[in-house]
Image 1: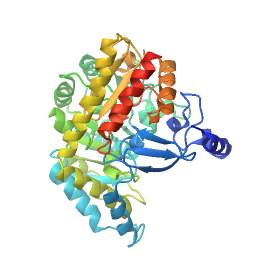
Image 2 (image 1 turned 60 degrees about the horizontal axis):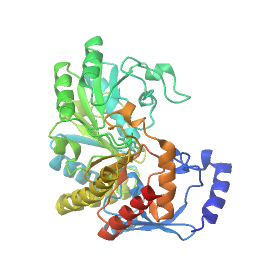
Image 3 (image 1 turned 90 degrees about the horizontal axis):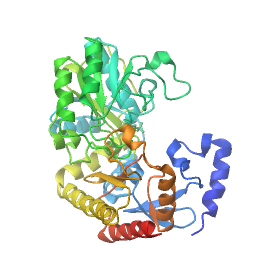
Image 4 (image 1 turned 90 degrees about the vertical axis):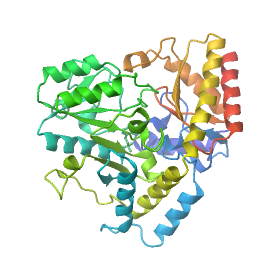
Length: 427
Ligand SMILES: *Cc1c(COP(=O)(O)O)cnc(C)c1O
């Protein structure tokens, strides 16, 4: 298995692209080898520029839930592109997309398309602030909401530490109104709400944490957030950029039966094209321009090619519920086998999983929040990643990311993956 062409490309890339990549995790920085440059994909497999083929568990970080390069989506894109790539004007397919989502997701009464999850979150927060007339927001340590300034707050610091930027170039002014609570700790949220009466516009949460590895909400966590938000007239925003249309068509809100005021989408909603969306209560969404005073715009928002891809994927997911059954069954088999193996051989690891999402943590401690996730041994993960890559399996190149199963994964894929994992722990 050679990586010559990938290595050459990476050398060229670092000369002209910061870090050689257009999004940081792609650089394999936590692994210490040159990233594999991907030439083509199909189904559950991706193929790099050196001709190596891997079973892929990134699925473009979730969008490709039907598998890579699904023919139906590709055909929809080809068909739409025959009519033009972008109009910068209103189109019929945008209405269809909005109607389709409003019809099938009970909490969504109105929705606005944007171009990424980052934009969706940024805009949802602005709408929440515009609606409530309040300035502060509460997020959770370890939850990722895209790279907008206000959301890049020191994810590791505790309840009380508000407003410490996580990234150079983010001013304290930008994050002054962002407060950080502890995932699965309702008390930490209650405390912030009580210390800032009438000032918190929104609580934003990943209903399943999927950016600190996979961290599941305790049974009371999401309902508890709902009642705390109701009590303080604060809006509850579910960031379903990963979980939306993945934990079943209605996402985490359907799965857990908790209704947010606003929801943000990305990833699956674009089927691999750059799409995000935010929506929810009509009274809040009517604040958005040009209906209301909250400004938000986008030259390419609702792009016809992106809408064709996204709507095609959503229609397939909605009309073929057996896809979610298959994903859940495969998740049970793959993550279940990983768990059994770890238990049987008393390996100090954790497997957190829900349906198609899963994560192997290299720590002896149960992972329930950011602090426990951080106990994972990232050097051990790097070894594991390299072993798996050599075995023809492409995982996320960092410990704190999820594995994504797609409908295109096969029983043979899962078996090969389990075998490779067992070999790793034997070595
Ligand atoms: C990926 C992600 C985002 C950001 O989406 P982009 O399209 O990368 O801007 C926001 N929130 C969550 C939960 C995500 O997983």
